[in-house]
Length: 245
Ligand code: SF4
Image 1 (spheres, rainbow, N blue to C red):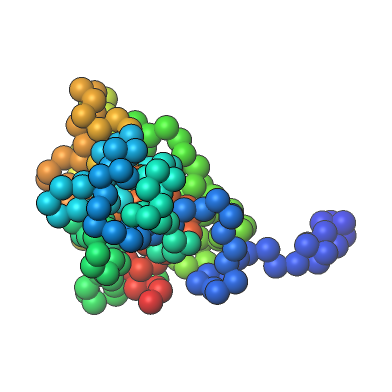
Image 2: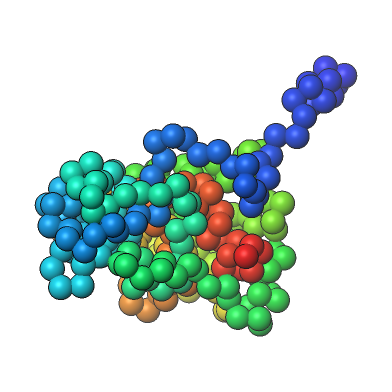
């Protein structure tokens, strides 16, 4: 017991301050994309997932982007990636980066904030995911991020949840389970699409086994990335429930 206490004293407080100017991201981290030119032909040709459109209305769709950086390497005069990790939006259309300012996720209305603002439980549904988005959600529950300090937790049953955090492209096999999970959560409820696969199919877009999020399940928050950085997920969730500016 004494040894355990001494170890805790030696280690000190290990949780990252959030939000904080001191957050250090790895040097190879790619954040919010920025278009430096409207001539995106070369960047579009380099993109393996068709996330860049170069014709009329040029833009980079963060909902399809896996942040591999190939476009910025092929056309550095047209695309660059900033270090900004606040990438979430409430609007699918806003994930398309153009020359306009990026519109970040909006906070829920006052009535929902009153319900979810201090205690927010999510049921995680992995609908065909590879495990990467799920791993980054897991990381949020470690001492480094300590999601629970904001009153946000993952629930073991949809009956105890206020919403779904969905990962994966929604395979045919998982469509029914997703629908049943959504139905089992009492209203009001929220849905968060986490990662490129959940938002637009990611590398599996168009595959015959992937059906995407059913139209009768409305999405309140989109978290882009492949997988999204834990800070991106944390920022999006807290922004949604009005716990960060
Ligand atoms: S970083 Fe995104 S937009 Fe650029 S090439 Fe990779 S997937 Fe395409």
